[in-house]
Image (cartoon, rainbow, N blue to C red; front, side, top):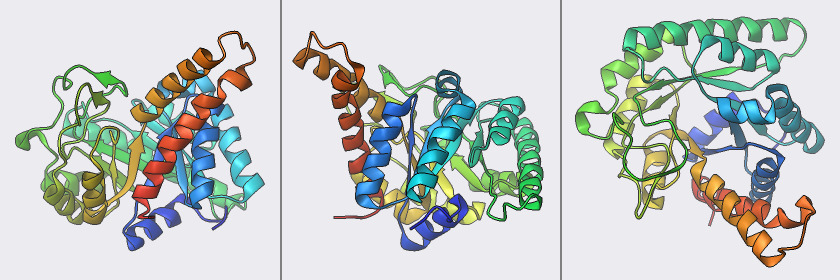
Length: 302
């Protein structure tokens, strides 16, 4: 395993092995440390994600520098994805900064508009990829993901299912829609609505995934599928979803919750401590634990 692998190679390999690449969102270097430590222990590739809000907090170019430094120092397949990006301008910003992948999220738009804007993002990424290759970076690769089906927008603890979220049969992503979407946009990856939700419901597990639908959508799409809203999903649903065709799985809310609880525990144990690197250690350890358990499951490691 090494840094010469592109994200595209990693995803293709995962699909062949019937595993999934774990995708974990971060807001700062604490999250990055925790996730990277977990991936290294298991010796598996990993994707770091930053949403628009997370990019605003950590810095767009700063996130690229942090992830790239780990990839180069350790020769490790760790990649950076611009998660849930809602405009062409912000997709362009991430591509120009050096992200390995970007998601244009037009799930709440009418299908025609979603297709048109996603296609524009793909065209720009392809142009920049060709420029990098012309400048000598033969491994230059920028993957573009589209989203088809609204599953909510907030990675937080939810009181109720978000209004308009596609969890009923008639609202889930359709085979004919995903086939057209991929064909007309040229995306590398697509995230469908298959019963998944962003966030975690209070007092219970999230809705069950529609596993037969995942299999149908993977066949219709012809490109790898991405499962968003992984927090709160049952382990058996993850395993079945991977077998059916999910190649990347996103986790965010679980990490955020672990971070918050770790900080609180650290301060309870050391109420007079003011050195962040001391009282934040439990937060980093808690995130590492979450990432480790998820990566172990996604990679079918016992």
